[in-house]
Image (cartoon, rainbow, N blue to C red; front, top):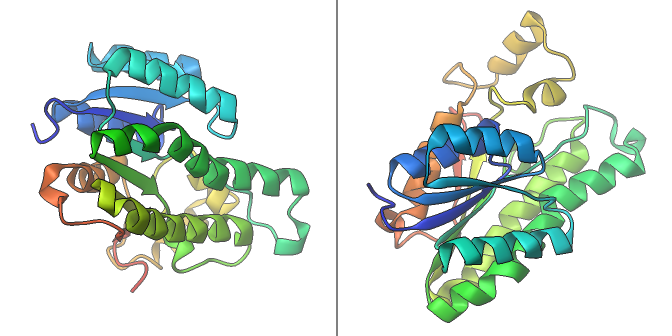
Length: 248
């Protein structure tokens, strides 16, 4: 019960790493808003996870939608202790000059602009309380980039830098900001990272991970729970590699 009495929002919370994080937070005593662009999937998961979970449909790339999420959260929770910026997208493996402007804008808006929008919506509340934990789900792509995922790599590198500068600026208000950097896992984005999902491509991908397996939602959830709990009260500005040794 490391998160007993705490409230949390997990964006992109209806599937993949986000669903794992939401499930873990609930098991540790938190009340959780599962926020996702797929409102129906969020609703299904919230119903599975019990009365301390509730769903909210949000487009994290759109300011009015993020503000509506904040208004709903404050009506439900009164206060917010933990914000997890997990929602993310990628473009398909493509030479950098061939990525369409539409795909670039989508990666920029969902992976980067969303962090600004959620900060604008929630940081004033956390400052007023003098407490809060923000977790940004970055990627090993921001630390050790792969070819043909250039603009996705860049967006996750931006998120890591944003995490560090947010941590420095918000520390005087006792708001901690950290990131986790997963290696690819069994999530809806895996096929997009690989281009196609075949045994040969999986084997090639796994050969770059010293521990020899993909990450799981449970791996991310355990790291997220620690960083957002009071056990990590002296940790801010970290970009924790949860990657089976991928970045060594």
